[in-house]
Image (cartoon, rainbow over all chains, first blue to last red):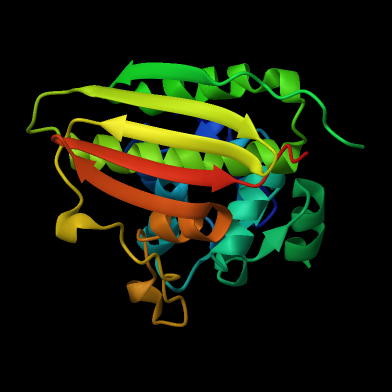
Length: 112
Length: 149
């Protein structure tokens, strides 16, 4: 699972450089997110713009990533492609996470 | 536009294992290419079948059991794609598919669900979902209302 992390002012951006977050990699993704967000900024933006497909295991892993960051921090999602957006919408998980159509939009909104 | 030609039925076989679902989905979407499904329809097919197949890999052939065959047939008809998934693994508990109610999300932070979305997605997106246990095989049938005539 290829996750790349960088800082943007007060924000941490974690970009997923894989096309799928599915059952085959869900545990690996959760652990990679744990390392990436272990210490660091209060607000993390997960850039999903390269992810074409997510299943319920991948969705669960993103929820787990949010929970392991703790309630005092925020995990925002950016750049959802159509099928990823569909999964979040149908399960109503788009009401649990701040969701932004683009990474730039997320950065603009969250920096202020 | 009225569809006058239908994709001939086709069959996919994989052996359960960590990458079985990815391989099966890639073959399925490849087989559906002549239909030129849009991203919405292709997403529905991939999502429903991913959930159905993940369940088989996880529950019908758990890691403690030997791996086994998963067979998929896909038939294209007036009312969409008719998919049949057969495996020789463990039976569905209670002899039926889970109800597939939506996971409760109006809960405390630490109780946010990390699972239980799979059958909800299948039943939300697929039609005519039926399950049969016969001759030591599980047979799941469902219809996806895509590529309609």
